[in-house]
Amino acid sequence: MKTISVFGSSRRDADSALYREAYELGRLLAQAGYAVLSGGYGGSMAAVSRGAREAGGHVIGVTCAIFDPLPPNPWLTEEIKARTMLERLAIMLDRAAGFVAVRGGIGTLSEVTLAWSLLQTRAQDGKPLVLLGADWQAIVETFLRHSDLGNSIARLARIVLTPADVLPALSAPPTPPGPPPLG
Image (cartoon, rainbow, N blue to C red; front, side, top):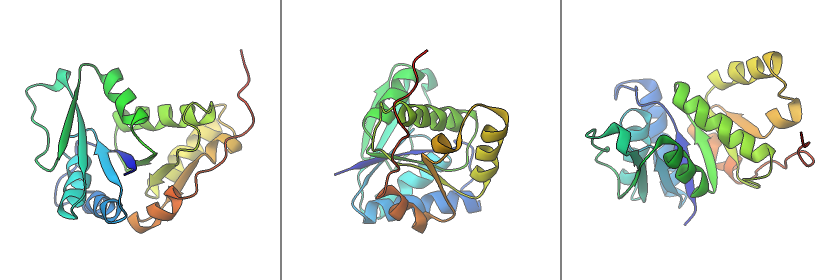
């Protein structure tokens, strides 16, 4: 079973449209046969976990000792307890066959940019990175305008508008540009 890591906010209310979007994402991933891996706590992580679990999927949460005694969300079928945030992120990147990000905060941005960088350097070759939601377009455009991110690297991340658009995007990962320059 392939695993998809989902990055997203811990600050998402259950009655919000973004929670419902993450729930639908989890449901669709599970129905397509993917295991769903997230940070394991509340907000979008709970929503994607709940959607996947209620669809009969395997749900993995990578929790972190620094958040103890915060309990994981109740929809997990497996919990992996990392000692540090860096270990947590390494597990989320290494165990995944692909990545999906929903709207989030600085933690989500750090997860996305590290996954993106690993794709660019071919350290995570062949793993798709899908950004769910129109808000990501402005973020990518800002990176293009205010950093050295080029179009070929920007194209390693695919922006889709609906949870239903995620599945086709996961099945066709982009090809990274040539070897990364050294130095």
